[in-house]
Image (cartoon, rainbow, N blue to C red; front, side, top):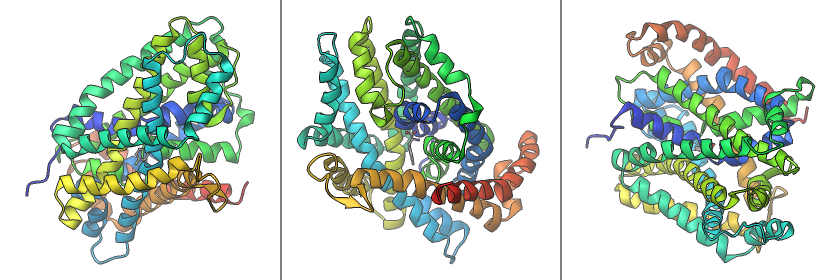
Length: 449
Ligand code: PFF
């Protein structure tokens, strides 16, 4: 059977940007900026994004497009009969684990979108209520599970419709909407009186704040944000036409992701400062601090609807990309129909997601290596699976694949002269700089430097 491909360049980029842009940009990035001291963190983050993450993204593109296979099949195809297939296995398991907890937060976005539509964050709800609202919501049993199930169902339905008719179509419509909505919110936030302090927090770095922890967090966030090391970009790249220039598609994806993170930062931080609140409220920033702001901001009800709509769209386009990794594996390696593959991945991620969701309430005493189930999944994926996955991917391209094949794929058989020049630098990064840098940052964080 003919393998499906993305129908257009724009569609492919929207799908890939959709994977990259997600809760990582709107939920994780702002609170990490708050925790790690603002602009200095952003500076390191941008540096890593272009120096390390973009080359790794290229590695995933090269593996995916050259093999035209799912994440597991790709390693088997390019290195037949070797242990590299276990890297493929890791690339299929990682997104399943990430989807399981990611969809729980997706479910919270569903709930908060509904709540914003019923104007639950209005000026007469006093601050304490809004802060308690989040804690009591996530620790309850049924309401988060309802949102989680709905979110996962939406993901499965889009993936079930296939590459062109589902994933690409959804991305082509939703990503432009997402950008417009977040730009509108950023304009509102930056024009609040007292917003300027928030803007300096984002753009004026204090370099004395940079240490090993900031570097590790920035690297982890940059991998998370570009969906690296877990088969997602590899799988999407396998649907990209052989004629496409992957250097420019990769750069567009990375630039879109970075711009979106900055716009999301501009939507959130100025408002946080304008209302005299703390940017350091951690993961609760979006679900606790922002509703408080919306309740006091002029036209806050409308801004809340737009914000949670954006959060929802961003989260769905990302979870779709993770879901597709498992589905592609089931279809191509297990011979399932796309429909059954979707049902299978849905069931696995749904059950694991239920455990993650309940770990805020009834299962909060269940600990895995000292963490609740949710935190364990979160740490396991962001701190280990994605970093180790990314390291193995660069090692594969830099040391296992033939240089001539890598160059051939990156330059489309030498037809793009600019890519040929870029390849010289890229090869150096892939072979030496990226593996060493990842190793150093990973180990120094592990031993707590
Ligand atoms: N890049 C997504 C975000 O920033 O929210 C998260 C993500 C998507 C991680 C896909 C991993 C992945 F495979």
